[in-house]
Image 1 (cartoon, rainbow, N blue to C red):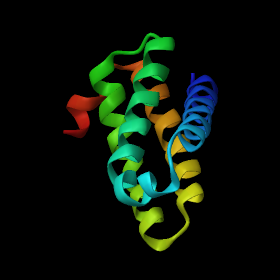
Image 2 (cartoon, one colour):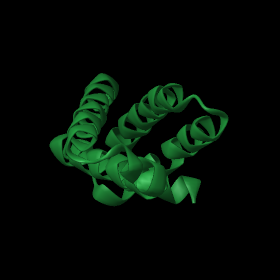
Image 3 (cartoon, rainbow, N blue to C red):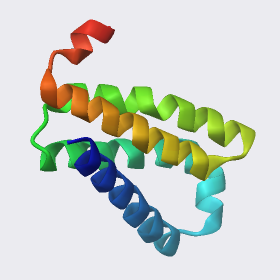
Length: 108
């Protein structure tokens, strides 16, 4: 589950990033990147969870938690390193959710 989640999330984020970069002007990301990035991350996480048949609420909670280090990386200027770390953390979360979907109850 860990590897499938990592591959699906990484592929989804990469594909969506390319599509958005080709479709939208550079200024969009300067003005709206702080909204578009997390929204794209959550959309990809929801798709990953659906493809892996995991419950949506725990998957999205994990995506939010895994996105925190990514946001910090953006602030310090290493956006793609943060995305890679977030993919790993998200995949670990998905593997945990696959074993026990009640993982959100333990964290919250």
